[in-house]
View 1: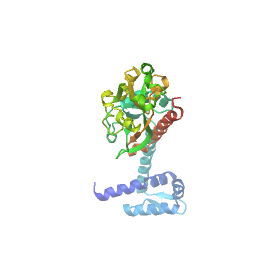
View 2 (view 1 turned 30 degrees about the vertical axis):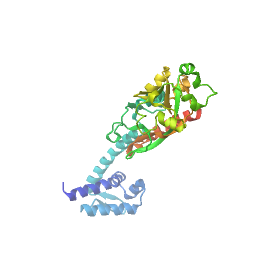
View 3 (view 1 turned 90 degrees about the horizontal axis):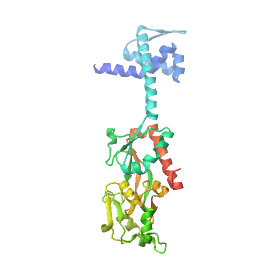
View 4 (view 1 turned 45 degrees about the horizontal axis):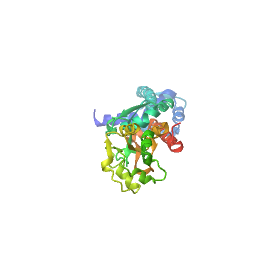
Length: 316
């Protein structure tokens, strides 16, 4: 197909809504009203199209609009073309506002938080499919629709919105605290309670990455010179670390969203003061997915669930 023919096809595609309206209304005036434009604009565009085609499409009279054979052919084709766009737009609207959302998040966040609120998403009409991975998915390649990431952020090349900032909070089981009364002795300040020889349970990755999810960061923020290196028991996953704490193995370093359910259930208790972190939870996705209604509904729902934690300290 040569360039001039491509140009003609482009002109016809642009004129299709107008040609379809004229073909169905049999009138320039009614076509103009249907398209919400001036009749003079309709006449001008048709004359311009006729000049490009080198054909007369309509015979204008004072009372009637007569279609030439070329006009009949093009209007018929335009009507057929436009009839296919409405179902396509309906399908596009459905894909924008409905359908399952593939949400990628780390295993610890899935186990300690996301799974517990998933039934509420179903009740809100949100269909969420959890993609549990501890490595970063490639959102541009479609490995997931959206992801929750923990870090300093934001993430270049992706749409990023902060869900919530985080705090570090040491926790231990009631049974463990009962065996170590010095940890709960109110006559001791909170720093000295932690500066003992009790085991400190840690997340192996957090101790070496830049998220500040580490005992060294925690003690530096409470201005304690306690030596923690010999007391640490690292775990590959934060949820395993917290489960070990529930089992009475030691004091775990918890953080926002990972410990609230266990605190509410009485499986864990706070030990020492909380410490703010630079790292946050971020909701990230491609720029195109961020424009969908599905993303906006997910964002609002997640923020509402997190707000419940901050305002009540527990899930409703």
